[in-house]
Length: 350
Image 1: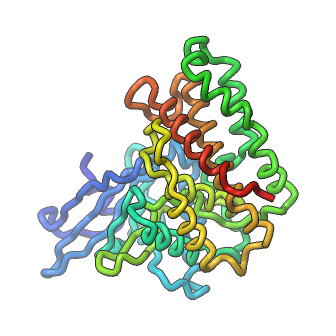
Image 2 (image 1 turned 45 degrees about the vertical axis):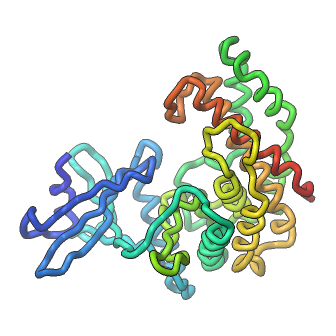
Image 3 (image 1 turned 30 degrees about the vertical axis):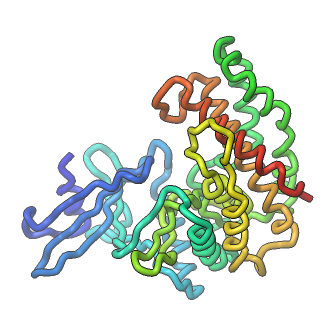
């Protein structure tokens, strides 16, 4: 695709020879490009991104939420860099191409890097601490100002019901192949019940959360290796912050790849403790005692639900997650089950 047409809705470029565009392939949902423009001997860098509106159904609502959060961070003295949106030449946050795709441009943050897998406990702490600062500055933001980017994303009742329907409709061969995993899930189907109940009764307060706090969504400084910026705010939504902590546990403490079915040496308690310490470093005073008492439980539930989602997709003939081989989703299920087994050894939730 020739990106110059959509690029020129955001900025005016004099010569195409002065413009270079490079794809960034780390993300799995949006199309992301780094744009470099040479002007008068000075090179300016931007990020140009196509929003996947098959997953994010309302790009305009997403951009509004990002602007609300960025403004709130600025007003609250947020000490880190913000991923600021650059309006197009009409002053709009989004441009639409000839195919109806939505595009946006943001500033580029130089001298940073991201990682996809935690490398040591210090890195786990730094990422969690960077997110903790982010949360601490938006915990007082009215969640009614934020429209959920993916409605029903943290509806665990729906996840369980979807699993039951998939199990009922699954072929005998798929059920036989996944029987061990089905037995584990069925044995623990009541694990999320108290999580759901506490969401409904307000014991887990509704807050504005990131909803995808994996370590690749934290930019680290090239020199100091400290956190510089929290990125990928497309998933902002009103939810319990315990979901975010649980997902950090899921993605930070797993020593194996997400599709590795081997159970040995899968969980790092050292990384878990670092994540919890970093997460609480700036949020502790704002969270309720009940929220803090249920952090371990949140990790258990979020990992369990991800196992349910992978197993549901396997039973449903792999309709949702991209697979590279026939048992890919089943291996992902095994991985999450192995991880939750280790997390269940932690002290039980209150």
